[in-house]
Length: 250
Image 1 (cartoon, rainbow, N blue to C red):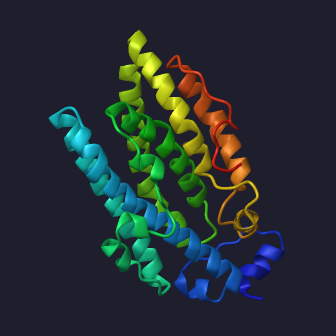
Image 2 (image 1 turned 30 degrees about the vertical axis):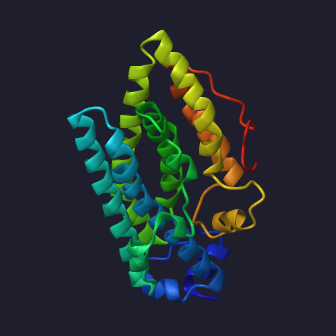
């Protein structure tokens, strides 16, 4: 038993301060950290691609195109930060830069790939990136300190991403026709967003909680998100769909 796990067994909060201490942790802990970080890092890189390949061409003004470039640069910075944490524990993710989106293992965004208009882009950032932000907030309290440290600037950026999405949706909701279109888009985006939290039956989910890498299981995190985002959706005049409707998995 390592010093870190001994403290945890005594009821203290587990804290793994650096890569050296990480290598002394049990295999289960190491595997969970690597899986979580690889998924996160790949997701950030895919986010950069999404902003440039999908959202930039459909942006209606020069200002919105500029913002898309800024968001893509932030997502790439998040990838670089995640890559650095993985490099420290001997995991190289440079290969991801050469992969086509379809080749990426952890973070496929079929829902994003199907977005066809600016309202869809706004809804994705408003609720989809808010769901990702909720998960990053959990990571900011990670027992592996390099992950927690990495998340500080990421959270600031992601709040801006969500705010931009909210602004776009708010603008649509100022007219009766736009409000109707926004409701229809919400119906499409809602189940995809809830599925971002993963399966409620995931066997890995409670292990993350056990080791302090997350604070909530998939379903607990999903329900917390629903409670947090619902008032923001409703203030726009939109109605939140049923949580079970059109879900890929529950």
